[in-house]
Length: 125
Image (cartoon, rainbow, N blue to C red; front, side, top):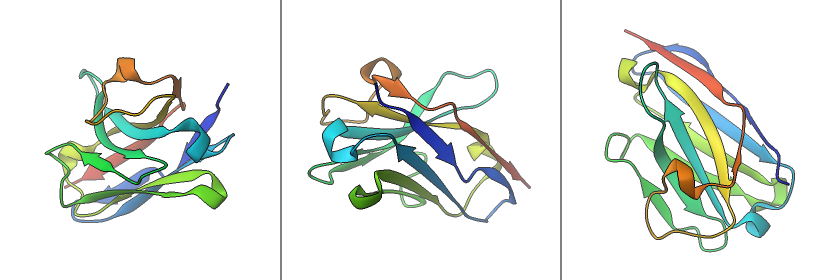
């Protein structure tokens, strides 16, 4: 069992930045594949970024390319999501997720094996 704990959510004005953190209870390299998803009110959960822990390959949703950056610190078993130039439409609950196998694409929710409880990000205009 892998436990994931997100932190770093909050409320900021449009154009601002936030950095989310996801602490894993085991080595991120051992898990293999980490991703950030988000779910806005009344909408389906969608992947925003993913990273292959061993190779560093990253994928991003088109809506966040150039604004969000996913990274990892294997020594700390932590994955980050740096979010810049935030927009009101980025408002959502952000979830960290882990998969036991890697995907050469942005994952879907059904691809992931473990989930955190989420952290709320609110962007106001």
